[in-house]
Length: 232
Image (tube, rainbow, N blue to C red):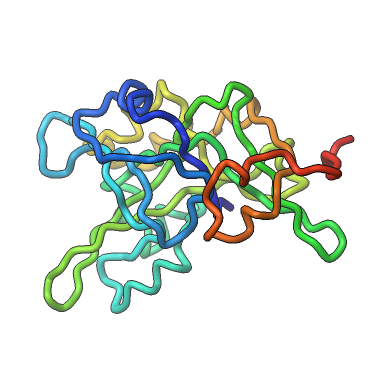
């Protein structure tokens, strides 16, 4: 699964990597948590020509037919293998795909009675993109709420000792295909789910400060003292 991640990359780097036409202001985040607004790259829904925009959507997808937006608290992740068939995700899987920029994410390993957080990232700390879905919901007064979810797949060998799932990471060469609103056949997207970047990831134990969403600074990714790597 994916329940916390980071985005510390300078905004101009993201503009270049994702070929953005429009953007929202960002500041460094070290402990992004569910229900918070997160940066999302999508094909601008009201603009022709496939232009990309960077917007902030609430993390936790709320289906358009939901009676209560609190359902999004249980929909921060969606299994890529079944998203096309699940009522909550199937419409978005065909028509509202997005990229969620990140430069690291966290997973926890139970060690005795404690849970040790690990920070997972690329060796050079470059940004990458989770495969995401977004949705628009409206309340009884017609006020819109836009939300999103992160797709997950089987964990890579590196991460399997921590969890059996991990986020789908889209390769830069596949961004255009993933965001293409005219591509509505999920079967044609399956080659993108191999998550090749997973083989390049590294991880290390970090401070338990990240356990609380209230902590959102560089201390969250600082290596923890006295903790051993799983594979030492």
